[in-house]
Length: 203
Ligand code: SAH
Image 1: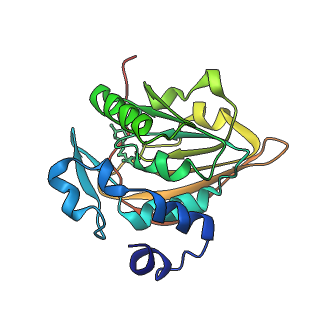
Image 2: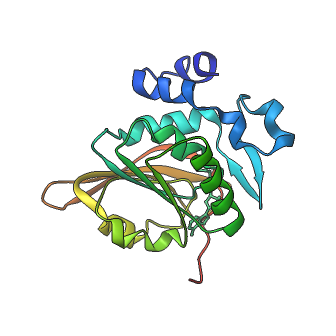
Image 3: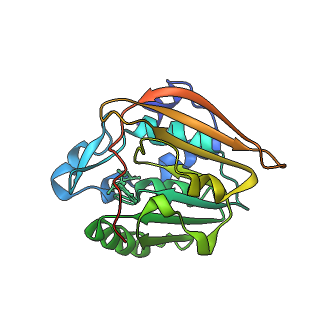
């Protein structure tokens, strides 16, 4: 998977490749999907949600550029796979999931697999995690129609955010947001992508 789908397509960051190689993707899948876990495709994880294609996980992880000293926020825990990939690259990973069953399942699995620096919370990602802010890095794995201001506010000066953004459910833009040391925000679009929409929570 790493050689054919990720290195072949131009990702050379050794730390990212190692994290992808060392994360047991099949364990994050429902039983009936495990045979396909390392295929070049997104897969259903229940509750109308999907785990991203391996290349997209690697590409976004590379763009995010998390470092060992960093506090990282993920919106959309899903299976917990992306959080597990980030775990060895970051200091701490905080991840928010809006579907209670998925939050529970991924929390239990990440604990069982000893991803000690990952904390899962059930909640609405649009609000971020103010108690743990500010974050060096923020990654969204569900697409909001536009960039949520609360998340930009919770980004540290010098920080970076990676997110699929767009109101169409079949195509969005992958956006990289950089916040400069003096708080100025710059955005660039890097790729057309297709993610599940980020839903509005009620909590
Ligand atoms: N990162 C995941 C992929 C997640 S798919 C993985 O590695 O498996 C997107 C996830 O975002 C879904 O689980 C969905 O329930 C969740 N989600 C959607 N809207 C959300 C919101 N407002 N807040 C938090 N999570 C949300």
